[in-house]
Length: 505
Image (cartoon, rainbow, N blue to C red):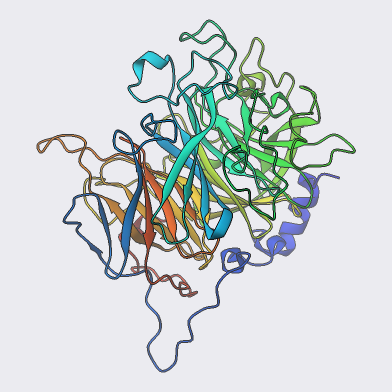
């Protein structure tokens, strides 16, 4: 039964701004499997982050003192098992436990349009191709326990603009196409804008993980999961308790939406279950948000303060396959709550963390990044991180444009930056404070006009020892190790931080 606006407003009247409806605002400290905090004794409290970033003599990745990195794959240098180059434009990534202590990573390749425009598209492997005209897809990367051996193979090919996606509770990857191209557009021979499932264990020539029920043919004959809709997908997460799927849309004119898919009665999630779904199975829904006074909120950019809580109702999408009209355009602005650049998502703390990367003139209020937490039990969205407009993106020290995101086993979030100017991986605490983890030093522009590609695919190894991330262009996957530790949980104080306190709303 939905939480009505009247009920939400009534409860909020008793709880200030409605914050008590979610208990407290600092849910990040309770990340599942979070590593115990360091024992701080004496008058000295642990400092935020890991210290300043040290320039890299190799010109690739600046890291804090004591940290190091290894290049795992690099387009034009590393090769697949079949001999072709690692495809370019690395994006969303997830990790899985592999055989003999290895780590498996499924890596998206965000390649749009005709294959001929890309020097290193995802190779068309027999049986793994959806549309032979499309350049994108996923590869699976296996890194041995000690990191001394890496192999890579194709998981799916012939998809388009594979941006982010999400890991399922049953150990597969959902890869999302960020496009609305239909057959006949941009050289495509099939409709695109779907979600596909990729099984990282489906490799006929490898030793399968003993704990997994492996179907070596699981990735053959790729089939879009049309029940999840056709639009410019960004990311997806699965509620392991309720079976609901949550999805983001990165689109504008008008701004995109945050969706919920409710499975049909009797649906049992797991391997091969999505392949059997009817195209119209379940219900795809879009959000209606309202504030503590019961007033409709048209766009998430209107939230100007960390801790803002909105109630959420859900309304049904009329035509999820967008046969004639894009899904987001099937609603009037007065019907749904939109947001600009809805990007990465991650499931943790019993809910979904959702990124709105930035907002400008197409939104009611400008900002340089939001991270929201959706609590499915209370049906509320809470603003966890807010980055004001960065006045000088070319200057190191401030962050903007959050994109891919993961919940850290050490507490808080790790965020990949896709903003203007300098690009970082950075952490965010449960109080919204931020700190640097890495800086991209690979200049793909010129000395006079430098340019740095975005970070993508940030994710920890299953054991929490290694942080994997990608530099999208040209396509580099790195493994970062170092003295990880639980970040301090302390109240936010004005004037403290890394160049961002002046930007908090």
